[in-house]
Length: 429
Image 1 (spheres, rainbow, N blue to C red):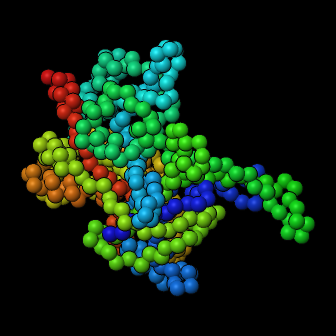
Image 2 (tube, one colour; image 1 turned 90 degrees about the vertical axis):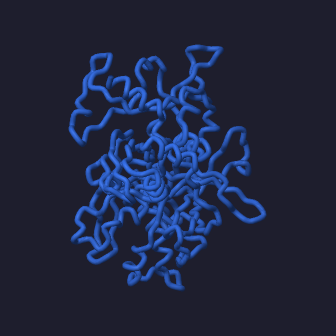
């Protein structure tokens, strides 16, 4: 296994698929964050290059077998050993809701530097106190509980307008192990995380080569992701934090790859990026977390990258019996789906079909059936691995695991807090 870093030196453009051509007023808009297919394509392109830096199309079948996970957002630092990862950042979990807090000097004004964290939990109920009803939990084996705030917590005010989109790993790790450390507490947003890459807009003009002047009306706009974070109190560019994309290449014990490092163009408009192999290691699963999951026989599964599920929000491959463990989906905290497509270089070349993805940050609540030893093995094989479903048609697919090999559905696990279980039992009795 190798960890590769992509550090953009220009605002990175990851196109959203809208038409963009030589027309007046054209706009190239970027996505908020690259899809795994973008960075995976970059890795495999680097692996299939000849000595002259030209991609060899005869290498397509080989490079498609390279297993890639990610991308993840990282924060870089430079020391005597070179450039290293000093912070791992992950998408904000969907089961954490951040509320505004009020300033002591003005009760009508909100404090945009702090937030009140509340955990969203599964609730097994068919009728709520306000009269609302649902039949979500009456669908037999496919029944799902709603995910929301505990009862009598409807006076918390408004959700925060500017919550961090990415959490620092140390905070996220505590959330995986014991959300009660933060649940109901006020936290400084700067300690929780930040917004990630900033979106930068640029206005461009087309130049007439003969006249060496701008073509009249030939203006176009691009928006890119600036991989620099200006933290609290940082007034100078030299004090800003450098951000990059981290990609895991190969299996855990695989060390033979042919990725080319260096500086090259990448993504839309071929903006300049650096490819660099890192000596950093992936965050590991906390031993206390494993013990808690074995004792509870339940867990939360967090998506760090978008995942492809055949049934939309419901996973199939993840719920198949594995390593002596049978899992059952009890609830899910999820936002609206994302849509991804792409371009196929294999014969015949052409556009790939569009797919709906469960977005990163999605939380799956599972119950587990198996021995403690089997559950520990199951956790080890889910942690920092991809859990997307197989290709739709296995008979006509050379590799049904392609979505997992492409990096879709990178996941980690967390405990299912005891508070959720107590609420469920109280409502059932």
